[in-house]
Amino acid sequence: MLKPIKNNQQYEDALARTYALMQKDIIPDSKESDELEILSILIKEYENEHYPVPKPNPIEAIKFRLEQMNMSEAELSEVLGYRSRKSEILSGKRKLNLAMIRKLTEKLHIPADVLIQAY
Image (cartoon, rainbow, N blue to C red; front, side, top):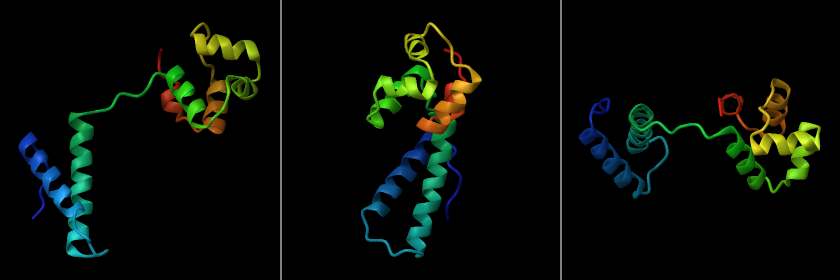
């Protein structure tokens, strides 16, 4: 019977069981596929609580997303509306305002909660 993960040993055991299940050719909607799904949820919850991943710096997130989308900084100027603003934003001289955050969220699909952080 599956139980909540409460300590590191249980976490390690759940990881080992998950790995073992992933090595099998599991049939969808089987007992083992349900076990794998539940273990994944339990592991995710334990990791979120004990090993939280910090949100990225807003400027680094913008640069990373530009790279992912094969966009140039000139194209970022088009998104923000002004060439000088792009330079000021990326250098850290100017903070993002609400309109910029909305545009970046819409065009680059960067979550707003990442962009509104202090930096």
